[in-house]
Image (cartoon, rainbow, N blue to C red; front, side, top):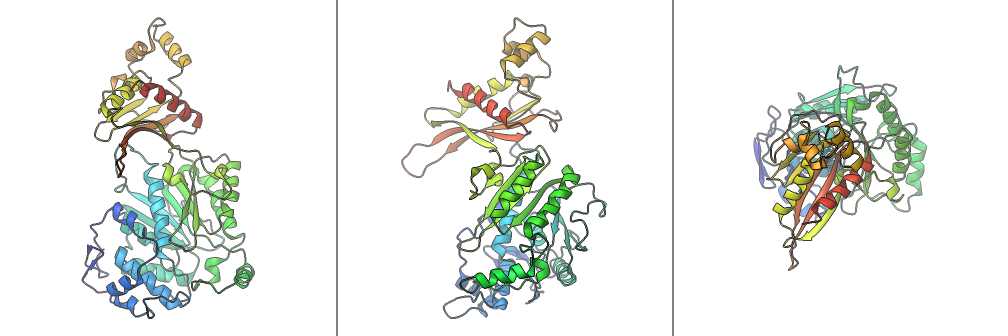
Length: 487
């Protein structure tokens, strides 16, 4: 492979200066990466036309021999080069990662972090500085490489216990001129997995890992013999990459134990899983420790092997519905975390004007004793924070008495309260510290457009942004339904 290629046109965008002395520059944003591999099966004939090195390993009819390790490795190299502008050096006796599957993990991680990080109002999180830890990064260094290409503001700590994998990982960081954003560290099998203090780090944003699946080499060999037919793809991994005491559950249990000590020093602890049965076990462990802010997902690419993911946080920010409930586990919906988004009301677009809904929502919010309330007309969205159930009759009466206005209406009492969000006009932002508020929410007016002759629909959607009390979210949705009922 020519590491000194000066330029190339790839998938409709320009890759500038791909030599190892300068970092690739891309003109693509998150939308480009979200749409990668959505078609499912890869078009090997087209890939062969675009990359001569891949064409050289194709068999007649543009077929790829997945039982040939060199062919599988070239597929990984080709996809990384064409779709991400990355160059990698891979040893034949270490795991060769399937790119679409690993890319799906990064996409999920971005959704998880973006949707649970302030600010919320119409703000892209793609420029936020973040530090992640990739445990067991492997020879390919694939997660830090994919993460750094997609998010120029991200940096990584990558660890491994295998000398050969570490050497190749460092080389791959240098080949792509990312050594200043990816730091690779040697670890011993008995070392802690999240060494924040050793690295002199007070906090990081996320932990990610693709743990060893098997409990022993004997289990690995037994499962291979039990298969009724040969594997569909060559496995080049070494035992040190695929086997550990307790398998994936044992490995992630170690991370859970460390997270119970570190807690909010890491925003999100995450892991990929090879077995869906592991989800139920690990969710049970988290619940035993009163960890309720967790997320699950499934990664599926075409007809290939399915993988799952789990993440948990000790923080108060809640992730989006797509990030937190991204699968339908066989164990049932009881395994899913509490929903963080719900449709409050739906109308035909002709029956409810956006201005009417906006007025009704904002009028209701201005009667409440909110810590913060902001409405952004350009996004048809409002963000609010509150210290409890301030819409209950009990609370409103108590507030009126405290203000010396037992005979005032709740609306008048709220307007007389200088801390009330009634002082905040639509579109004007407050400057209150909302990080410790008991409940954070957003209210959005959306239009659902249809391709057929059906009329568009207008919906009001409530989102749980912050807090640990789901009952508050349910109660708030009841308030919203009443407020928009007149529209």
